[in-house]
Image (cartoon, helix red, strand yellow):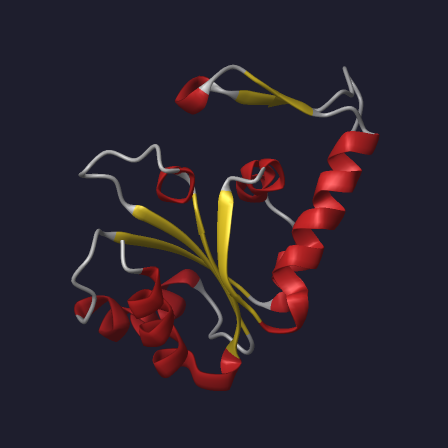
Length: 143
């Protein structure tokens, strides 16, 4: 996958609004199949409100992409700080940060890694059948 070309397209499309771009999942770890999509995390500020508006803004970029199908997740910096289980694998190194203005994403991932370790969370299983044990039987999990 041509990550340099992808970064160029994304930077041209979003300009200075782009804060971070990362590839995660099987394409980041090299465990993808030929038909695997490319999971992307984009931190953009500002972003339109709502999934449909964000996807509509993304569509022209995707039309110019000759590579694998792209599966983007869009976050503002504030939404990134609210967290998501989608970020857990990134704490294990299952991510390739392609662009990170001011280290926003790297800092978030490192902080999440620290918090997961402090609560005793661990991933159980292998590959696609893995799940996270949050180390809080019957307790509330706050990230």
